[in-house]
Length: 441
Image (cartoon, rainbow, N blue to C red; front, side, top):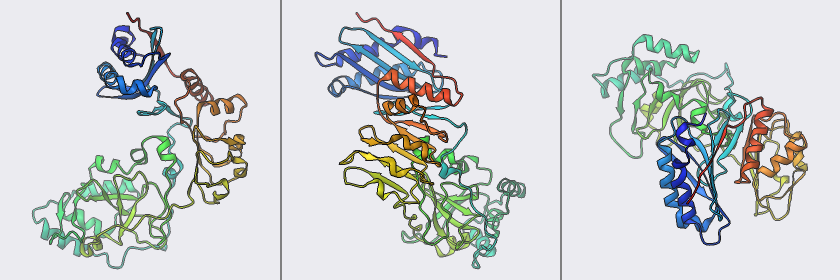
């Protein structure tokens, strides 16, 4: 329920006044859409001229409002007409609707299947009994090296080690166990310091839940549209499985820059159990191979992680450079359709077994949009509001969708209508929208 303070016209008067005062002469209406929560706010004005003239004042006014938002972010749409009428629509946070940021349509996506991750993050590693630990993994070498660098370190409790292995459902590699049985935490800086060699790592304590939380799928991809458009290329050396995240990755350290070093207990067919992967904190999916074992990471000190697997063909972008639907391959997972020299006919996609994400840009001209019902793997579809209305009106919303995205700043009432219709199809409550009329003198 909208907080009582936000229902009072006086709260919004500075915002709509700033919109009015910043509008250029003769403007029929000026509109602002944004989000506000305690300590965070932002948005955009729909008129470029007015944005330059009054944008800062509008943001300052929205900042004052944000201090009154008691819980999660609310979406805000404010409009002032040339005749001086003003109103503000406040959309309460919804567990199945994500709000976009500045310059977006604000109502960004609708989650249709509860507690569902995009496909790359639902993949599970395949176990292969033929894969073994590296023959050069040496628990004694790890123990001796750690003792030399951290002579006063305290080992992790055996109970913590047992709990970590119980949560994994598997034993940690012997050299990783040797690390924790020697030092439960500490900065393991390897001498001599050399920019061309692996510098070392800060040991992640076994009970450091915050550090390990980053390896969870939901912590990596942010919003559904972000995760749905990610692809993970296959490792050309077959050492690392093509996973966005994995329950078999166990963080043992960070590189002092926020990047994690993880022991991989479910490697690819040419990898090793306990190989060390590099998880870049700036990358929302996947991991790169770094060393065959923790022993070899610390003793051979590789300088750089392996290059990520090639993604060509997994994601295809149709646009002004002439790429066509014909370039979609059997292994293509994500398709972006932008403005092309000719309208893009989607009919050729019918029956594609692996296409899981389709994004049609607002300005793109397409034919045979209803082919989306003939894509068995399609789980995320992003369209502008008019196209969503078209599919909804003729009952052609793909039944297997897990999430739906809005990619434009279309008519506000139509956008709310579409989001509510999608929520209703999924058996969810509609958006709660509060309208506040703001008198202006």
